[in-house]
Length: 280
Length: 189
Image: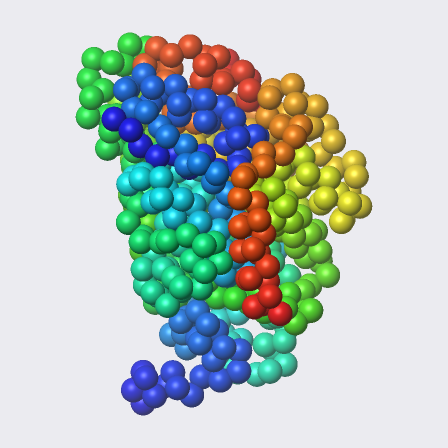
């Protein structure tokens, strides 16, 4: 089967290993992902902070391109892009008067009928039903599933999982052979867009997240968002400074863990690209 | 007074917020759950529940303080406040509106200079190439903020791990993306 793919900017650069693991897992499970041609950035935090119209027009162009290219359902592995695309689809559906000005700007038609899946939804829908007997190398470690903000909020629009104590990633980890721990920071914010402009806040927020996970015995943190990953992994220096100790617990994408459990080799899944070495 | 009659008397900034975002500041009954759950409230001069209360006063002097606050810029739009609000007040949507208005009226808090510089560098990168060019973003941000040495230790590590593209990815229809930008920024002025 085939599905559309909106990778987003991080997945082409600083979070390349997320793309690698998404492609490796889907390929192993017989799913072909077709990248939306000529996609643009969704505008992320910068657009909705500074300019509402831009924050809707940029994602709308992406959805229009998917429609034009005959993609009826797309997977958006980046939680932030997933949020922006889903919010845009919702806003245009709720306020049809927005459609005209937005389509005028990008010169494309917009019907609003592309299905948008985050990575966990895609796996739940197309991979887990056929997973039996395929887990050949169970990931036998205690893991803390970290959902962050944008995978589950705003719940009224995303309608995915629960906004407090979500379970979907924990269930996926159980199926991959891991033992998800119960912990308190599943949906706390890592500091996201302040990574560069206010690194000290990120050190504190991500530090508290890491501390709770480690105190409760997690051997790895599992994420489904490139911003969560870069703050917990690349910003480990700021985290260690905040906590006053060195923490070497690695951060893996859910797709990397699933890939390992499916028997895919570490390099194909991009494990060597992390700042904090994956020694488990 | 019926709730509709109550709404119609909202004026000042609260009225503007209602008109542009549908957020009703007068629904807030000051339970404080937003401020308790906000991961940044400790870094704000007015945590979210204070902002709501100020909007309810319709006091122009206090409203001005909100538009000039650091609060609205350090808010990460993590949506925790919204998800815990018993009245389902979309505080993040209101924050987006307040930020846009603050910038448009030249009232952005000086302490937020770096945060805003980052957003502007980010958008400039997309305007030119259609996609975010991370190297370009960082160079532009450093030039805007004169933080030349910050994060320099990260760059070689990112390069050796294949996490930085030296060249930007250019989309074909860059002119369309630029057009989206010019339309939306024109309206904004």
